[in-house]
Image (cartoon, rainbow, N blue to C red; front, side):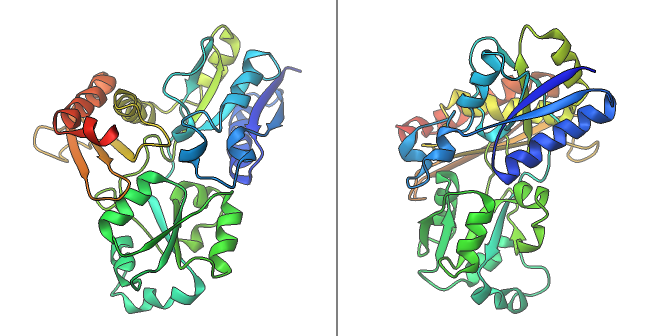
Length: 325
């Protein structure tokens, strides 16, 4: 009986993700014995400050990657949006499985559920946001979301919101907030989709680069594990996230940067001459939402990295560098 160890964070969502990969591997190799190594990262330990105050990318990955490098684990499972574009030497992302919903979700406190009935039909998230009273308290842990929320509703009160999904939901249910914005993928993966009032269209709020996708990592010299993980790869998700991560890397994206990006493969006939093309949207903004630069480009999927760099250069030419400084 073969053995494999997967390193993961200990939150419910991280454990769901690790268990998902364990199940997928087990379905292909029923005789494979797979264990989990649960670790606490710096991002898990420091909960009294915003992510932008305690560091950039790597807050939720370093301790897990260390376990790969020192041999305690053979596989690591990360949320793609948490993974730095350049990891430690000797490690590689061996698989990017199919992506879940990449959008941001708006959640309403019990005292504001009536807004769903007040809105006509199936309201958009931006429409519901528009019905909140001036000064309403909206919780989020992301500067990217802060920027776009302030762009949409500069009169709202943005409240820092850290902790795992359960902690954030408890604060919302307790009335400490009037609304909150969380990743739709995490809520749906945990079976908590009923808390979503509406999801923001990407045109309303651009997601984080890699949001909704998983990155399954191993040592570069571990050919057997790379082969195993390769069975889990989804080509379309890998292409899209390659473009998004190239865009973020060129702009120096981190937890201290209000930056978003989302790519998707266009279906045949989706746009004139766009059959088989990759479409990428990107955003850079100031935290106060006053300055926001958005752009989009379409190009061949086999040059996803080049497409991401080209869009970043387009925004830099439009003044993104000044915002980022």
